[in-house]
Image 1 (cartoon, helix red, strand yellow):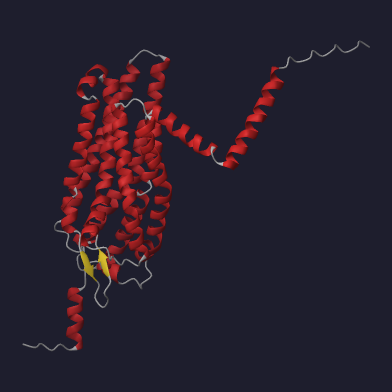
Image 2 (spheres, rainbow, N blue to C red; image 1 turned 180 degrees about the vertical axis):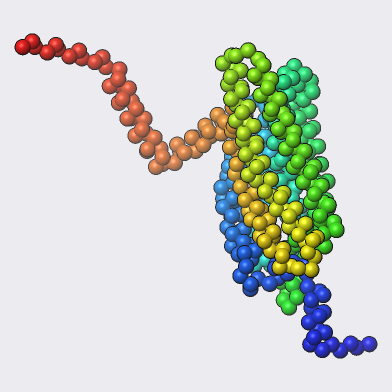
Length: 368
């Protein structure tokens, strides 16, 4: 049976088979979302890759070869760095995808793996930072019980549980990730579940992930930090206690800054993009502002991989000393830097020699 369609009917069919992400197919319109996806996102990902990968590889090298004694915090920081590195290794595929005008030619399995890894990474980072906050809370508020409640072996098992839980939490991303072909061309796009037209599954999933993966850890971090500061204030004033209180305040401040600067806007913009689709399912033009904000947050959140090595230096004193010492040793091997350091050392030696000489007493002025 042959069916003949006129031009109007053909246009109707094309509208029906139009994929949900119309903006991903129509890249000729110069609106904000297209500019972000084609230019800002690959540039930011490339900058994060260039800066974050050396820092995290150096951190892994310090963890593996330089640290003599591992504590519970060291286990959590190592897993945090491992999560950062695994996400950074997936960035070249996303950079190539966006630089290639949103044309995905790597197949569906790799598309699913990249989308899962991107979604999975944020919750790995959040959960490991939460584990570090709980570890500090136990060490200060329950110092004796903490040795039994959470030793290094249990910390390793907890990290394995975090990896498993976040992987299970990301399974729906694999089910919602698709490869779609744009009408009128052979270009295929690797879709993101947040940008799907149908929100029956993406909306509850995004809300559940925001509650379990962000809200609960944020409440736990605030509780642990406030209880720890309260416990330190109750103790008698001592220089060691004062230093611990200052370090804890810096830790709590760093964690809250990370959450407020990266994770809170990311979850708000992601849920807003899905909710607007649910409210206005037949008005794609109303989605663009929320989609643009969400894509920009994806670019900003990538910077967290460059911040976490500095966060590790703030937490672990032993790691900080080894990390800075390794960087100083690498800089000293550079010929130009080595010459500068030698000149600086010579100047310091001259100053020390001058300062070591006893000053000559001035003669008294003659009386008139």
